[in-house]
Image 1 (cartoon, rainbow, N blue to C red):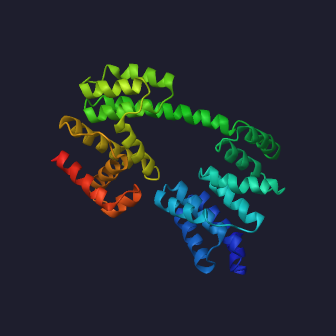
Image 2: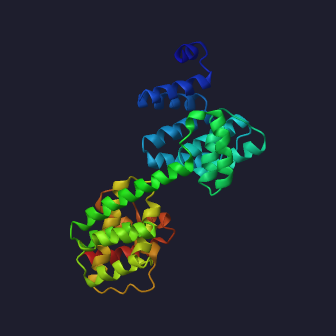
Image 3: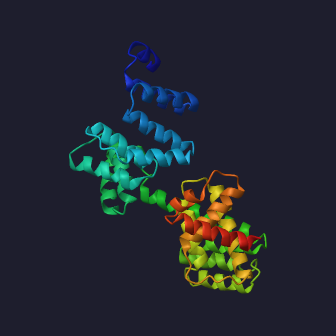
Length: 324
């Protein structure tokens, strides 16, 4: 039907956008993307096409494209209620809840009712921006709109996600410990640090027998047991934050590389006082990317970690010296 409508009304853009969604749901990804590109070529700035494109990128794990398009759409200020709702719902769907709440709450205060999913997305956006009471209020309305959504409350989903995360941390930490490599065991302690106290202590007890307690590992283990932040984890946190839009295996590989570099720091008694966290993170990222033959310059690394090119150059030399 949509194809027939397009043939008859070649500038009826909503038919194109809905046909693109139909293709996507049928797993015809290329056809869906091609159709959106056609819309954007013939009708540049079409907001529904851009939002659908962002959703497709998100589900296809195209992290760079998601980041760039999210940044662009975050600057858009639609005038129509329909466009504001499309933007708010799209941001909620990809987990950009602050941006989503901005538009959906504004629509709510203006008396907008939307379709059956309006209160659903507003509840999610509210919950994940710390407005739990309002989220529960909106959830009641969401169930009036769509009763079969019962059981999908954001707070219940959040609890499930926490359990999945804990399980994932446990598996990764135990796997890293089993290698007997010091840098892998540091990684396992870093993973344990992410858990709530009870789960953290239980995991530490489990992996303790696998850890070869050198002076370094004993020191870091004690920090994690006491829930204190060790400087190597400060660098790791900065790296992980900057890599959050990249694929998970790259993030893990880069973190492993950082822990390996720190082992060399420790072995060679390098002065690690008054640490420039961003400088170490940038240098390690730059050298790791070069070894992976990824396109990166010292200027790229400097921009990514908000430091000067000269600082990246200086710390890159230090890392290379430690590794050689």
